[in-house]
Length: 382
Ligand SMILES: *Cc1c(COP(=O)(O)O)cnc(C)c1O
Image 1 (cartoon, rainbow, N blue to C red):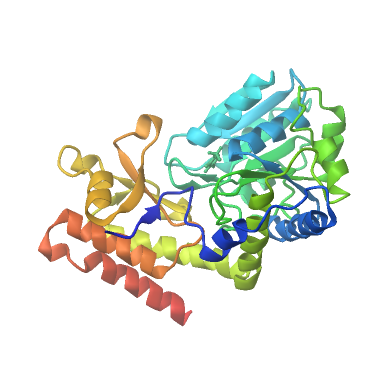
Image 2: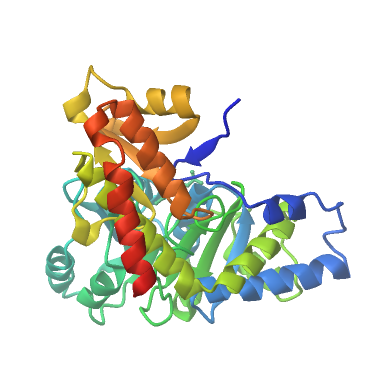
């Protein structure tokens, strides 16, 4: 018997308090008890989005919330520019295309972030203001790259296009100020930093985005933002909500607010820094450079070990640690270690220790762990 350590970038481990909250008996979703619960979570979630605007909550995967953002804010034929640096950026463009937008894809090399220059250049060329929307991925989970959303948004200046950000693997773990940075729609999911099981999607909607929603002609029914806003005023949802998930969300938000968003953000930064330092001391090459490395998932280049060590399998078989592999063209080339949500220092040390043993060279024993411990010590002193 070995304890399971789920070190993928989502779904992530769920704290016991949250799991217990999910076991509450069912209640009437049109009753007072639910209405006060739903009002409370709808207010508290705004603190995580750092917004005063509405945050709509849907029973869905994160992708559903991405689709909802597209379908509610745009019309067929709208020009949408998608800036992508990986699998999830590409997915956002695919969704917009599926709904009939004219999508212009600007893709950058995987492992690198979207540069401000290319955004600025494209926006400056749009003298007639044809671009209706711009899509960004905050944290590209497939490559372990964090985009600097604040800088990318600034690079757009006062261009009127709606700015839509997929923050599914970052919101609640990485700084993202929806209002201050003027992001019109931020999309999030339950199963990553928010420490919930999969099953809820979230979208924040700015005033400007609500105006666009009034004009939007893309087809929608279940996902209709206007219906969701109307029922939210009463503390309800248009259709049956995922009641157990809402119980869980209430408790997860308690945990988040108890720890404090700033502390959570600092914790993720420190955990990522320690893991990266440890991995480097074990001789691993990291897929993303330090300056744009994700605080929530670390991609490790494993091409040097091809045919020698299968890390995912070895970690699972020997230690019951689950890490993620590479997606699409990165399959077999990277492993991804998730450190998002309910994760602490010892979770980082145990994955490093396990890797030392899987590598099997005695002279490496303790090296990664020690390097990480030094980062933690320094972090404590600061
Ligand atoms: C996980 C993830 C998604 C997809 O979420 P699902 O819940 O699987 O639909 C989209 N974008 C990013 C950045 C993600 O990390």
